[in-house]
Length: 466
Ligand SMILES: Cc1cc2nc3c(=O)[nH]c(=O)nc-3n(C[C@H](O)[C@H](O)[C@H](O)COP(=O)(O)OP(=O)(O)OC[C@H]3O[C@@H](n4cnc5c(N)ncnc54)[C@H](O)[C@@H]3O)c2cc1C
Image (tube, rainbow, N blue to C red; front, top):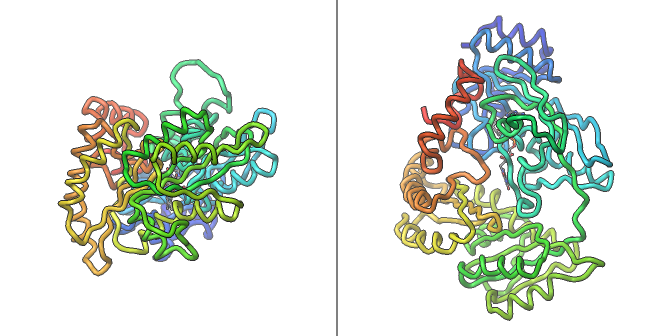
């Protein structure tokens, strides 16, 4: 329970302007992109340095105050949501790009730098930061690390786990750890850095990171293809792999997703005269010496009768327009209706069988509930969204969607798939962790949490079932 004396401590440390208690601020800082829980933090504090973070954490530990670490609040698992009078600790003010090493190809940033700022700073020196996602303008590198974000370039560069070379974290007792110091090679016992990546703010607060940059990919070519049968999509991926094409994205969406984007995204146009059940967006690097890869690739895919139509972007403006068809899905479905989201993954060679097994579940779902599916198919990652009319009561919609979701998770369990490929568990999926993790694994994770945070003050209620 927060008292006036706690607020005085925060105000003395940070200044009045950075201790927020107005209802509007608490509403904004207490929630993320999900709209399922009612935000109810006691205060939002905005430190300016690692020393500030450590001082706040030490004080909260002494006073038994729970902390919710907060980044750009674009999370889709309610990980940054504060529902129970917690202190929200936002990294927003810690937004400096501290250095760029063009020879070692690394960048040292504070946790509140946005993904887009990191991308732009890399571009300025002729390099490339490969994490890319539609929320890049708002999400933070700290949030990307805490969620082990994946994104649309995962197929080529991996996720956040692969990009972090060094990590500074503040532990629940206020201790500051500097992990791996930006080294590329280091075999000196357990890699503690990896423990904090994807831990959703439950083990430590990320305050600083050294991230990996790469040489920019060669010019990329973008194509959208219309596909009749889902089973043909993994086959298209197979053709790309055998042709040694360097893919930088392999995304897919269904007709339902496409129609919703055309309805809600400003200026969106379908590249085809007729609708198709499925679409693939493929991005690939040009070959050595500027060789075209897309046309010969499409010829082969057409020859194998895997697609019914295709378009290749002839300019960067058209490439952006085609990408918009994929990247605007999340925002468009949010405008279209109530949404419950799943973010599952399977081994790629099981996708076709899984989708066939999904068919009867989709068929039996309530008629006013659309299942809108899209995702990073080249990584085996499908976003399944249950979309219902906004005229329906939200709680009633969630209950009905949950029935369908549980059937899908049961099915997924049989395939040994994951109930969260990239969004995380947060508050939303704690009850479902057992579909993807064994009791022994969950017990071990709880022990690690207990060791680092014996009072359970860092992001309580997240990841583990209560
Ligand atoms: C339109 C849209 C598209 C998206 N596309 C993708 C996608 O393609 N791939 C993908 O992986 N995700 C995607 N997301 C989800 C989201 O953007 C990512 O999970 C992102 O990494 C969250 O970063 P954030 O800074 O917004 O974190 P927040 O939402 O603020 O927090 C997320 C979690 O991290 C913790 N946290 C935040 N900062 C810190 C810190 N400094 N230290 C410790 N813990 C911290 C929070 O407590 C919370 O548990 C998308 C979201 C939207 C809205």
